Structure formats: structure tokens, C-alpha cells
Length: 290
Image 1: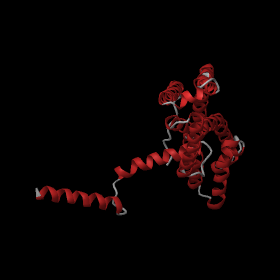
Image 2: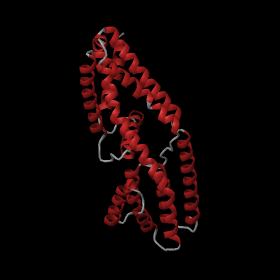
Image 3: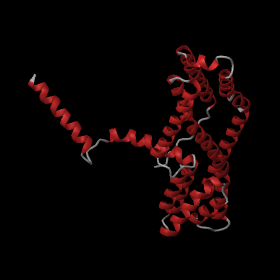
Image 4: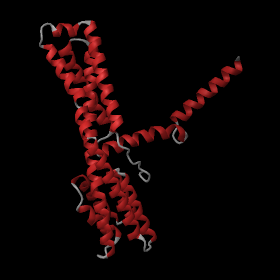
């Protein structure tokens, strides 16, 4: 018995020591946390919130959730319905920036084939160096890419280190196509060679096909996306109409009414998420992003 207690105490001391002493935490414990935080920060960057920490965005979501819960309590007069309405309100900022992220990614995907082609022309017939070609081509890109290329230009003017310049560009874009293009240019800049034109041509053609396939898929989903909105609009409209008819508000305040409101909101969310999952297009993973 004493031996078991000693072993348990030793294990406890080891766990506490490795948890709080710097330099001794295992990679297995740190990697998942770091990976999830990196994905969240990439998500914010792709949504145009590159300078917003994850903690601040979470604080905004919590504040909106609390405000939505208060409105839900005033409307339905119960804690269950208020919690459900608060959860829906908290999901609104995430949904809004998710849509913004999709639009920004679509604009970047449309622009990258043209940027790569311009880099190819500048490094070939115009005789520009690879860093100059990249920064000049970025000036003609869409507004969603301008801030990232401006930051990369500042880094290049300060350090003239192409590797650091590309790291700044990749960090501000958090885009798989940008990662592939930057790594191709970096290898060509450091190693040299005569096949840069062929590589850029193949990369541009691959990105062009991907963009066209995505456009075709979105066009086929247009009617379904329009119908999907009715899973929210129609039930919410009927619920608001029910508040003003007869004893509708009193019915919502009863325990039975609160449970039905909670079930209805859960069904709405489930249908919305299910439809979105069916229509989701595959996203490219960042291979070279740090």
C-alpha cells in the first residue's frame, strides 16, 4: 500500500513539474493547443482580422451572446428560450465573418492566377528580379491582398531579406495558393535555374482550373443556398407573429412553451448546419504556412 502511495506521489510531482517548469513540457501536450490556436488565427486573418487576437474576438462573441440572451428573455419571458436566442446571437458574428472570409478567399483565388502570370512576365521578358516582380504584381491585385503586399514591401525595403519578406506576406494572407507561390519563388531566388517560367506557368494553370471548378460548383448551388435561408426566416417570422396574436406571449412563458421554443431553435440550427455541411466545398490545406 505504501508503495502505491509513493508511486502516485511521484507521478503527481512529475506532472506538476513538467506542467509549470519552462523547457520541460512535452511536444505532445503543446502541439494540439498550438495547432488549434494557429488555425483560429489563420481563420481571423482570412476574414480580414489579422490584427485581432483570438481572445478579443471571443470577448465580442460573449458580449453579443449576453445581449441576445437579454433580448430573448424580454421576448419570450423564460430562461430556456433566452439561452437559445443568446446562442443564436453569439453565432451571428462568427457567421458574418465566415461569410466575409469566404468572399475574401474567393477574391484572392480569382486574383492569384493573374498575379502569377504577371510575375512570370516580369521575371521573363521585363527582366525584373524575383522580389521586384512579386511586389509589383501584388500592386495590381484586389483590395483584399493590398494590405499584405504593402506589409511585405515595407519588410523588403527595411531588410532586403526575401525570406523574411515572404514570411510576412504568408502570415498576412494565410492562403494555400500564396504559400505555394511564395515557396516556388523562394527556391528560384535562392537556388536559381532556368525552369522558373515553366513552374509558374504550371502553378497558374492549376490555380485557374481550381477557380473555374469552384465557380461552377457555386453556380449549381445558387438555388439551394437561397432556399436554405428560409430555414431561419420563416420560423423566426412565425414566432414573432405568434407574440402578437391572442395570448401568444403568455403561451411562450409557460414551461411547455419554453421547451417547444428550445426544440424549434435546435431544429433550425440543425437544419442550417446540415445543409451547410452538404454544400461545403473542399478547402486547400496550408502546407508551407508556419
